[in-house]
Length: 98
Image (tube, rainbow, N blue to C red; front, side):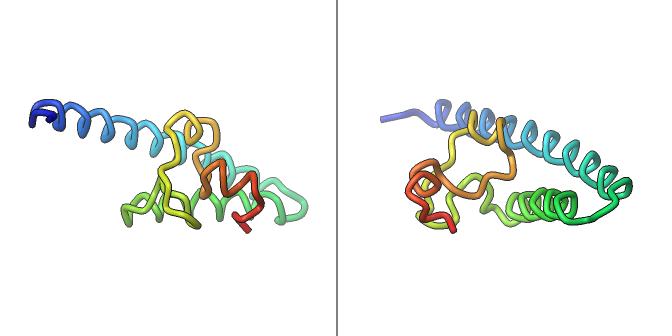
């Protein structure tokens, strides 16, 4: 059985990871908004802004990092590569993410 100390260490590590991911998302949001301001057509840039804003909203609601379809946890490394990710690799791979 894990000790309270172990749980607290895990909790602190998860909080640090969320802080890191929030920073990445906020940086991407600034970049996407700047791109949107320069874009001749708003399509792709507007979608990027919306995706990052949605990820930050999920983070604020406590739903960030879980698959929107099956509820599985999305690994930290995957979120670092694509912090707006909404689906686990299984749902994305099988096409069930749509």
